[in-house]
Each structure stands twice: as C-alpha cells, then as structure tokens.
Length: 206
Image (cartoon, rainbow, N blue to C red; front, side):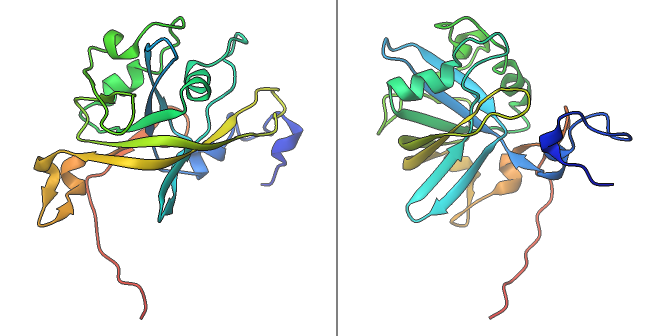
C-alpha cells in the first residue's frame, strides 16, 4: 500500500500512523531542564538523536504546546534557561521514565513525583537523574520551529552541544562503555518498547 501522510486519516488496513513503528528503535532522550525560578522538570522524548560527534551534539523535538494548548514545560524552560541534561533511559528505570511523561501543572517537579534524585550538574545548572548510569550535560546551540501538521500541533527542534558527560564507573569495562550492562531503553511504535540485550560486531570495509 501507499499513502500520503499530508492527507490526514490513515487508509485501511492501517489503524494508526505507521511512522513511529518504521523509524524505530529510537533512543529515548530523558530530558531534565530548569526554569528561571530554579524549578526542575523531567520528561522523556523519543524524537531524540545524536547528530554530531565532533563536537558532540544532540537534538530533540518537543511540542510547543500540550493537548490543551498550554506551553510545554521543557520547551519553555530551555528557552528561559538554555541548558538541559540528557539522562540515559534504561530498562531498570523504565517505570520512572513513563511516569515522568505525565502532564503535571507547571512548577511541579517530576523528580519529586517519580521519587528520583536531582543530582547537581557540573558544567550546567540543570540536575541529572541520580539513578541513571549516564548523562549528557548540554547547552542549547539553536532552536528551530518545525511546520505544523494536519492536526495543527507544532514541534520545535532543540539542538544542544554536549559540554559534560557523566558515566558510572560500574558500566565501564576494558576502557569501553558496557552497553549490555546499561540495557538502554528504546521506543518503538505505538506503546511498544525494547531494550538492548544483545550486541554484535561488524567491521567496515577498508
């Protein structure tokens, strides 16, 4: 089958938009921010990626407003205080990750609601999740408003430069990050998730 996503409703036999299922698995950017009053926010974003290695840079795309038309806290915060931390989402922390996707009133800390530790940053004023085995401290490089789709919701691309990397010593083995020890969480389509339980090597052609 073929359909044009610009036309709106999905044709039979699709019951949901297949885009999320086809662009998968996606790493989850568990983003912590703070507002100008020093209040912290924490939210997961599956539209997240590393986009450059030198310098290390990442990007994620929060909606500008929630379903009720209110400004989203994460975007409001990074525009107010242009820093954020990407906390590694792991299988062990999966329930906390989902819990922080809840829409709370502005000023309510997801750290507190999820029972997570707000560990202080080193090169940024935003805390990391103390229970996460790794975190990327970032400063905002740029933001870009993306076009609104048929449902009229608009996202904003936030690009950040990584200025600090935290890694727990226990997940470093023989000088490398042990990805099996991390068991990184990934988002698939719909409400499906996965996590890393198997790795294999492939060498590039010389």
